[in-house]
Image 1 (cartoon, rainbow, N blue to C red):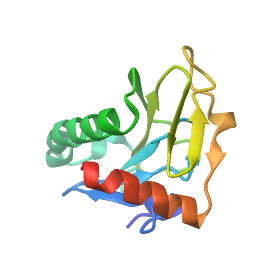
Image 2 (image 1 turned 90 degrees about the horizontal axis):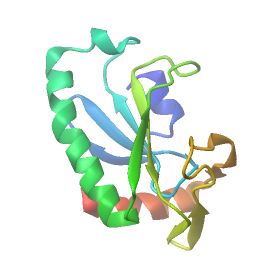
Image 3 (image 1 turned 90 degrees about the vertical axis):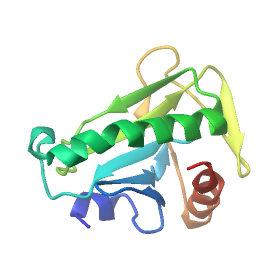
Length: 141
């Protein structure tokens, strides 16, 4: 796995694995259910991914949207491809909602709603919370 995937806590944060993509729990949660969608490739440019990775993205996003809809009943999803600090191809996937959502004893408000996501207000998870939220989300995939 590439360094970006490891930085986001793999394998402890692994929720789902596809041929070309991993779905990871984002260890800092600006909204409940925030994920990292990471390409398994060593590519640092989205356009450099193999065609099969681009094709698979359609089924991966459908699976994430279905899972997050069931888990947090989001109003919108933001896909952020920032790649400024972590260079390998990845998206931050943030379910957006008005108010708060709770799971596994954790309640998180969408502090940026209805505007841009407030990444600075993210709740940083410890190992026990990561394990609890991974266990909560995995069955939805």
